[in-house]
Amino acid sequence: MSTDTPTVIVSGAGPTGLALASELSGAGIRCRVVEKRRQPSPWSRAFGLMPRTMELLDMRGQLDPYLDAGLPCTRPPLGDLRGHLDYRRLDTPFPYILILPQSRTEELLEKAALETGAEIERGAEVTGVHPGPDAVRVEVTGSDGVRRTERADFLVGCDGVRSTVRQSLGIPFPGRDYHQSLMIVDAPLGNPPEPEVYARITRRGMVAAYPFGDGTFRLIILDREKMGVPVEQPLTLEDASDSIRGILGLDLAPYDPLWLSRFRSAQRHAAQYRRGRVLLAGDAAHTHIPSGGQGLQVGIQDAMNLGWKLVAELRGWAPDGLLDSYERERLPIAEATLRKTDMNFRFETSDSPPARLARWLIMKGGRIGPLQTPVLKEFANFTLRYPPPAGFERNPLVGTRVPDATLHGGGRRGGRLFELFRERRFVLLDQSPGGRAATLAAGGWGDRVHTAHSNAQGRVRLPEVLLARPDGYVAWAGDAEDPDGLRKALTRWCGAAGNGRTDR
Image (cartoon, rainbow, N blue to C red; front, side, top):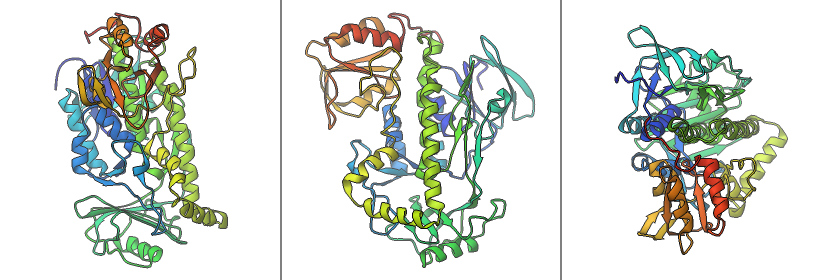
């Protein structure tokens, strides 16, 4: 392990912490991840990547290993053996859910973090936090049991729902636990379903099966007759098989299970995401029911949002309030996710006549293609929109996701817009004939903005001038005849012209 003092310490080597470490080290920031587990977990809470998560990984040039390891699912079932959601209706290079165990996702995230220069110390744990005005002192108990104190510019707690970082700061984590328990089984099946990606909802409950591509399936079992069983009671293969038969009327015949577990979810949310030089992300900041597969996605998006803002702060060019915008942008997203997943869970677990009727209507209506599109965009994380900064007009594009496009002209032929984000800088796309906007941005902000004077071709028509943040969201949109508006946006997002530093 390097003896250099880390600029940022990340507590926790789950998906959020590893994604953040990759963002920071990839931008040249010294970063150390401290993880109390001596070995990566073999268990997989999450089991898939949504389209927006894949887009973000693609923007960093890291996606190919995930595509090689995962199984694309373009038409996940609605639960009545007839209807499906069709992800091919979405405008994205990745119109599907990528089924992939979280253990494999973490392995690939860790590999990317190490390749970009991050350090990962396993068997060590953050045990105390002492923020100061110029640095944060972090007490770490190492794998040898020796306690030491480290100094860092920032500490980010990505250490889960029982976050030591959050508790050390006394940040409230209000919410509630659910009493209902569900079952998870990872096992090969003697009688696998057809199709392999399978879900069936009946009066007694629901069974969903997702293949991992190695002969193993993830089974999620919601048995209304057994939801009152405490999570502390061990789950047996016989008990799970009994529920499967009772719900489906057939036996999937799981055998030689790799993992059997009951789980009970909670809905909790940190009251704040930042206190001085200490920040929270992922499950340390919010936890919710896994309905819709959003937990891992929200955590990685936390990391992408926070990473470039920490880089800006440490490089010395961050405008006032930029780091505070992490909480301002991400906290409402988590709150909305908690509301939606809570509603989904109540809807899934209720056996009331109105709930049964609603489930029937949704399965029927879900077969109608145009009705699927808003639901698909929600699941894919395409509906997220960050609010514009105070004092800026509410352009409908600002804060929305940047779609991919093919670039032509300006020395580019067939390149892609997403490829421009791989330097982890702002991207300015100038489609005007003279390229005045690109010249303006390169002249004063070239160390922070990647400029491209090219034409974009895609299903979505992009504005003449587009300024995009490093995390792939629109910072400003306009035309080349508004240099004052662009200059104002560049200053607001990227700091004063010529104010970048590269000494950290």
